[in-house]
Image 1 (cartoon, one colour):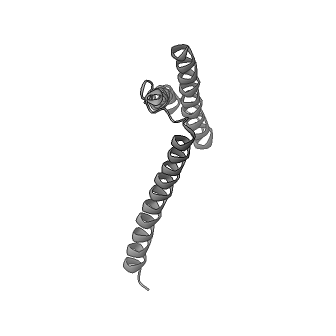
Image 2 (tube, one colour; image 1 turned 90 degrees about the vertical axis):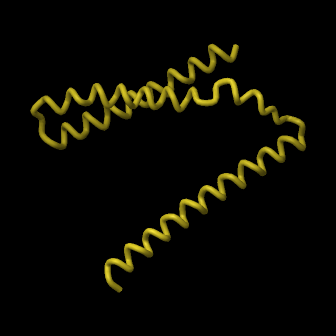
Image 3 (cartoon, helix red, strand yellow; image 1 turned 120 degrees about the horizontal axis):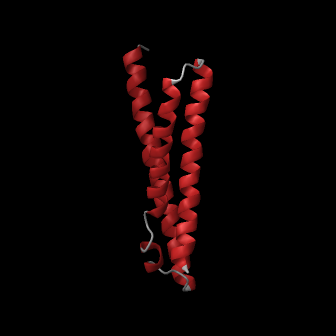
Length: 110
């Protein structure tokens, strides 16, 4: 088999995998909502108030992490040390964004 055929098969399998994952997640969420509605516990309006807070805070934290990690590119460090500091900074600020989102959600939820 030549490389073009392998790449085409790999690309098709990748998209089939993504479509299958989306279908499984959508089906699972449907079954959860259906079970909650049958029990009378499902309330859709509760999730709409702070719908994108977590995503926004995480993306903001990652952006700040990228900004701060750009400092490490100007310092002359070994490549491994610079990579470790850059990725560590990005992950730490992303986690800090998630923690901030948690505190904001608790404060606005009360």
